[in-house]
Image (spheres, rainbow, N blue to C red):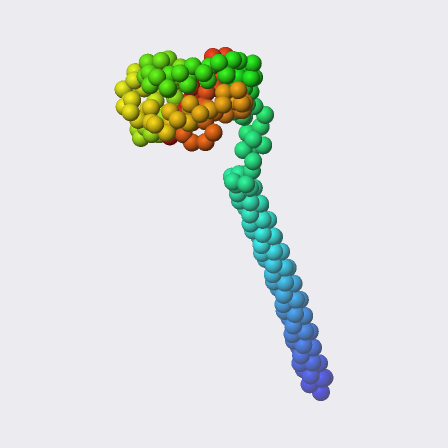
Length: 216
């Protein structure tokens, strides 16, 4: 009887031990599963953070690129900027120099004997004297009937090579002879001998009077 009891007790002990081992195994497995899930969630969170950081970096890079392109475009686009403002002070010194020279020429013209000089022009035209007229020119001079070089005659020899019949056109001669020399007044363009076209224009250059244009 004792043996049976001992045997039963042994079987119970083995069963209890097996049950305990099974419980411990399940707890261990559950703990491992929980740990694995936590690790996976942390890795997923880190991956998400990395992706968000990468996206922010790309957005920042794109914004900087757009700002850089906009800056380059703004820098290159000077089409609507006033040239004098863009180039700064002194950019138009050459034009200013020309303007000062023109003002000086006008001042010289006002203070010159332009009426007396106009009388010499009338005499040369009336006499149809090419040499006398050539000596009264400021070269280069504009002669409107000349087709070459936009009507500009560069020197005395070139002027003397022109056809006298065309130079002393009857309409020009009449207009010059009819001019009222006492009524002549200087302007920035010079003094015009003749009420309309045709006419002869005289001006002062470097303090010297001369014919600067003949219009037919």
